[in-house]
Amino acid sequence: MSFEGYYRILCKNGHLHIADPYRLDFNDWKCPDCGAPVAVEQLIDETNGCDYGFCQLPKKEKDICKDYGCGYKEFEVATEAIYETCNLGHKHLIKPATYKVPEKEK
Image 1 (cartoon, rainbow, N blue to C red):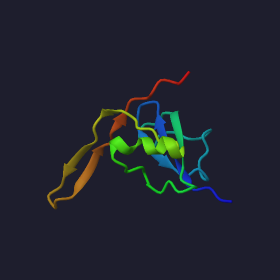
Image 2 (cartoon, one colour):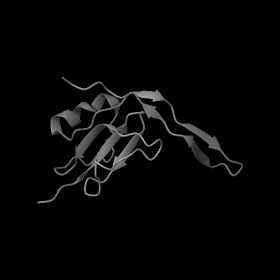
Image 3 (cartoon, rainbow, N blue to C red):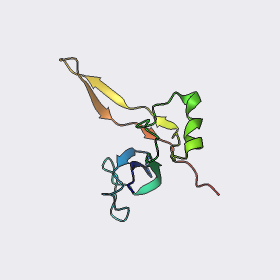
């Protein structure tokens, strides 16, 4: 048996990152953008056919993930990413988006 999937990690300041579950150590993880610790982690299980990659389903169809149990949940955007276009026409990320850290479920 094998496992296919990834972690979506949200730091305490709202930066979202994708991590390989085989290489991740939560004890040492710090946000590469700001150095904050983990606030929320989502293990996305794609082992049994949830082959939507980073869950590119249209918003109205995201409930399918609940049926398959892959673990994907949307985070609400707090601030949009800021991009700048250089003189060659390429878009460059200036500041990454941040997301609202959800309250712990009771």
